[in-house]
Image 1: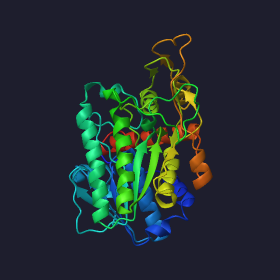
Image 2 (image 1 turned 120 degrees about the horizontal axis):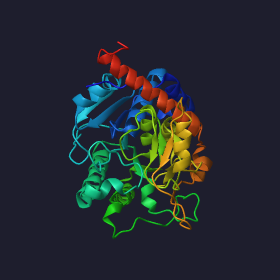
Image 3 (image 1 turned 180 degrees about the horizontal axis):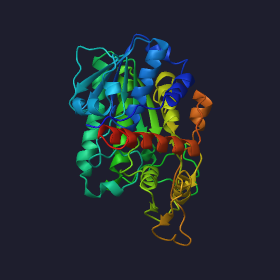
Length: 372
């Protein structure tokens, strides 16, 4: 098992400095987390460790993992930290009765395909999946985690949801707000991810009403940063992969879709802030408002490499066809929680590339290659 490099100290310091006033609520407390082995979870865990060490919180986190040994092999600097415990199991079957957890973060999702982590509502990975099984597992997992929180004396529960709950964004709506009343098509099985997240939000709200659990909801959009998979269904990750391989950078469609990307330090800052300061059962969009086309994104990634690779667009745009959008409004997070984007996309892409290059160097060193 090849270990992954730690996150950059400057990135972790940035997260801690921007959340410094929040962490006292976790002092001496216990946290339970699902999804700790994914993109979101790795950032949350490493920033938790940084805050715990720097601020002397004496807090502990238990991380649910299907394969703790594999997680330790990938991230030994996290798994072997004194504040971290690994629990074997999955979100549908885990039991922690007799233990107490003051906070629960539910960031796990049943993957659409092996090694995928669906952070956007793109239906392409769904062609060969079983939508019914995926829906049932994700909703059952959320129900099980809510029951765990209730029996473990949990005060606050963070549900990591998705912008997929809004369904297709109208082309005349530039930024989608939390009170938009749209929804995924209920008769289209390929909308299973958004449907499961909507059902999970409903379950969480109903559970909060019955049991008094403080449920926070973060609706996440698109992101860039270390740990983002380069071979999954994320355009920015695919473009970075192509650039690292020397190019060309390939855009599979016509490149006219609009997306926005938040760097992972801001993702971590926003999620921790929503956990500690969010209003109960009031969703907050998490993402960037700075929209750009996928074609422009590919070109921006290309300029981060030297020499600059070519960008190839698979097909031309259809005249008169409006561009698809997946861009949040973050006015609620800004006005109520004072959250903002602090790392711009150009810098975020550069930091992601640098971490991936460090990862490649570490892999060669461990293999006894030229850097060994």
